[in-house]
Amino acid sequence: MADKKTLDHVGMSVPDLDAAVAFLTVHFAAREVFRLPRVDGGAGRLGAPDDAAFTLAMLDIGGARVELIQWWSPEATGMPPRADLPGGTHLGIEVDDLAGALAALAAVPGVGVVGRPVTFEDGPTPGMSNAFITTPWGALIELLSWRP
Image (tube, rainbow, N blue to C red; front, side):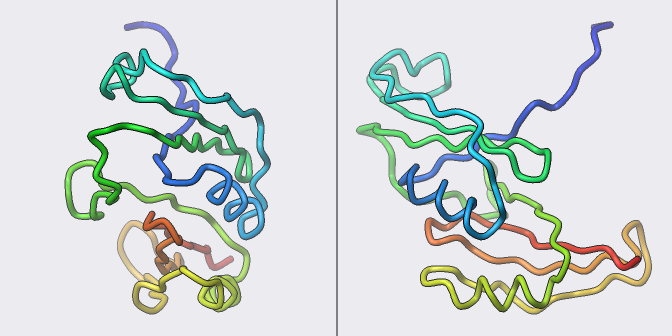
C-alpha cells in the first residue's frame, strides 16, 4: 500500500473500566479523550463472540493514546495473558523520576513491583533505565527514563 500509515492507539482489555481510567489518570496524568457507552452484541467484528458486550474509554498519556476496553463475555476467563505468552502486552511510560515513580506506585494497593530498576550502559538503549510494575488488574507497565 502506498498510503501513509500511522499508529493511532493501542488497546488494552481491563476488568473494570472506571477503575482503570482512574488508575492511569491519577498515577500517569492520563486524560480521557472520549468514552463509548456499553454496546451489546455485534462484537464479532472486534474478534470477540457476537453475544459479548463492551464499553471503552480512549485516554491520552503524554501524547500517546491508549484505548481501555471492558468486556462482558460468557467465554472470558478473566486472567490477562502473561507477558511471555502470545497476546501478552505492556505499556511503556516515560517518567521523569524512575525511583520516585516506582516508590509511589509500590505504595498503591494492588500494584506489584517486578524486580528492581536496571540502567543500560551499552546496546541499543544506552542511558535508559527501566523497571516494571503490574497494575491492580494485572497489566504490565514499564516505567522508563532516559539519562540526559
